[in-house]
Every structure is written in structure tokens, then in C-alpha cells.
Length: 252
Image (cartoon, rainbow, N blue to C red; front, top):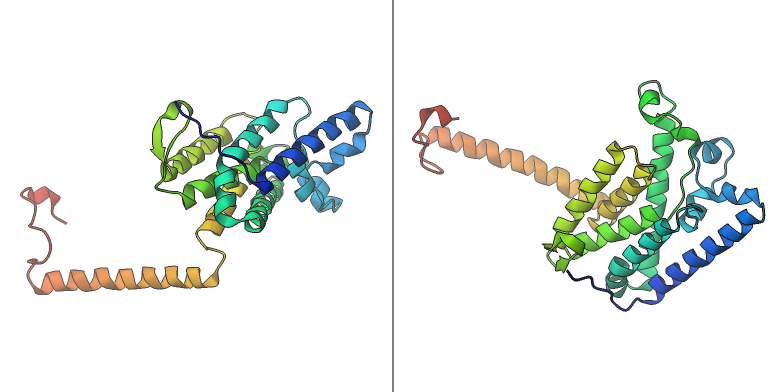
């Protein structure tokens, strides 16, 4: 089993130091009875009803006071996967991507919060509207998926999963998140999926209108190609393409 611990760059080091510093400060303030610190956590009700809009950003530097390993694992993943991305993207683009993934996670939390107020989703989502969400997980998992998309064919060794490619690792991460969402874990799956969606949109260039136009055009041309090929097979008596199957029940 091999785990790569590359030398982190300035952005990764800055994020790690700042997150640890804010966590220590958060603990000290809570122990001093400063309850206002909880206003830095993200709550859909507080953001939409009270306009505590700063929560969509401040929650990225807040972590569960009674679960320090939540923060530690976030920082380990940020170090492991963020270092290579920072070298490829540069400090500025890396930090912009980190914030985008964090904001996309917050956006999905707010959307799910609004859905929890509707009759069809209320039994399923329960008290999601007033639940607080905190942690850098959405940004970190966005960085992780972005690494897998950017280095899709690069091989890696990860814990007990063995040797795999980056794109395989992305599928495993998404599958685990789906399982977590279906479970009764207190982890904010909405925030995680928001980060994953942000990574796909950013790394696949889906934020560009030209990408959507190309996708629509490609789909239209593909339909036309299939229609023409089908008509040619009819005209030529089925002689185009592969030989017909020996089993008549398999004919189309």
C-alpha cells in the first residue's frame, strides 16, 4: 500500500494553516461562551430568512467542535490531491477553484433546504431547513474530483483499494457519496455533491456556452448519422455493417 505525500505549494499550505488556526480560535471562543461563533455556520434558514449571506463562505473555515478528525481528514485529502493541482493550475487558479467548489456546495445546500419546505420532500428531508452545515468538505471533495478528472489516466495507489486510475477513483468517490446520502450519517451529502458538481462543471468547461452548443450540435448530428445509416441498410438490403446474428431471436 502506497500513499503519496508530495511537497505542498503555497496555496495548500496557506489553506491548511488558516483552517487549523480558525479551528483553534473557534474552540477557544466556544469555551469562552461566545455563542455568536455559531452564526458563522451555514444554515439555509439563516441565510434566506435572516440574510446571513456570509455563512456560505465562513462555513469553509469552521468544523465540528467535537469532531477534530473531520478537519484532519479534510486537510489530508487537500494535501494529497490539491498539491498536484496547484502545480498544474497555479496558485491563483487553484484558489479560485477551491472557492468555487465551496460555493457550489453551499448553493446545493440552500437548494435542498428550499426543497425541504415543500410537501413532497418534507418527510424525506425533515429539519434540513434549520440544520447547520460546516466544514471545508465540499471544497476538498471538489479538489479531489477535479484531480481525478484532470489526471484521469494517471495510476495511483490508495489505501486498501490498490492500484487504479484517476477516473476510477472519481467513480469510487461518487459511489461512496451516494451511499452516505442514503445512510443516516450526519455528514452533509448535499454540500459534498455540490462540490462534485462544481468540479465537473469547471473541469469539463460546462460553464462555457460554447460547450453546451457543441453538445447539442453533436447530439443532433449523431441522430442524423444513425438515421442515415439505418436508411442505407434498408436500401442495400441489410448488407452494411456486421454479419447478421445466427440466432433469429436476436435480430432487431
